[in-house]
Image (cartoon, rainbow, N blue to C red; front, side):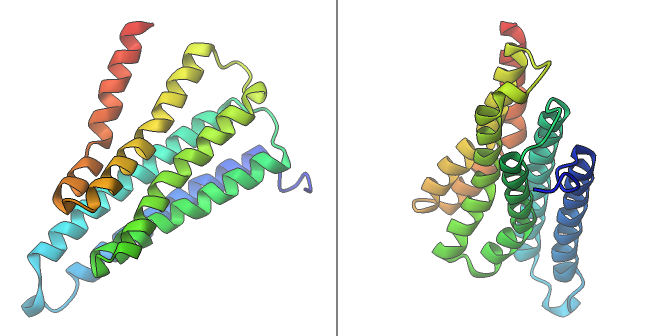
Length: 194
């Protein structure tokens, strides 16, 4: 690819823009429910949407943060890395849409789409870490292990949540809310071991 596209600063700017787009989509979806006819206001739908908003915000932020950290340690981009990150960013912008689709239809297809949009970015970042490990300069083995463990938290929780979707949707949604506590616990465990 052209070196203009493979500029790391340009890619970091794009990742920041994707975070902004994701947040705007999240707020817009929440606002459309809140701004409807007050006589037809459905508090359960609104509260579910609010939980989905908070959850999606956390997921988008965590993936964006992890990508930013990884990009800090990669001196130069190549075609493969650029395409993996571009696919990751596209998937992240679909995350708010998937959550609202699921809230509106609660269909099996919508649940699959939500699982895909929450799991795929983590798997793509793991691929970046594994296949481009030689490019991650100045990243110690401990830091690399910590980032890889953090990258597995969201896909793992959403895989478990996706399985529970078929048995109990409340438990499935509750598991998804464990992302931040999981990061805190894992961070403390890894910090103790180093």
